[in-house]
Amino acid sequence: MKDAIAVFPGSFDPFTLGHENLVSRAASMFEQIIVAVAASRQETLFPLEERVEIAAEVLRPISNVEVIGFDCLLVDLLRERKAHIVIRGVRTLADFEYEARMVAMNHKLYPAMETVFLLPAEEHSYLSASIVREIARHGGDVSQFVPEAVFSRLQRKFCKF
Image (tube, rainbow, N blue to C red):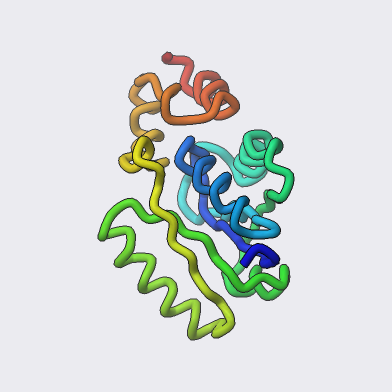
């Protein structure tokens, strides 16, 4: 697998220490990791361009990581980038059940695709971007959950902590 290109897709709204940990670990397993920041049909804290910028800033020290934005089917992105592997983080059985359905559908659309599931590091096993968003919206201190580049932007956005 070391010579393979893997894609780690997500909304990354906001990018958390859990995301950073998963990318760092995946980068040691694959030749290249493409962190694919998805456009969202739902309201996000940060627009797509800023989410790409944040992830790129946080992940800059990892030489084999590229950060891009995308607004298409994941399988189309994989074909375009000549990638066959998708990285997904799963924390709970509910995460796995959801991801298993997505894998089945994506595999129907792109049979060459394989998915690698990574469990978060223990210290990040409870962490999710949606929880971080809620804490930040209500003025809670999220500094222990996100990289500094994210924390400073959240401070400016909410001016509460």
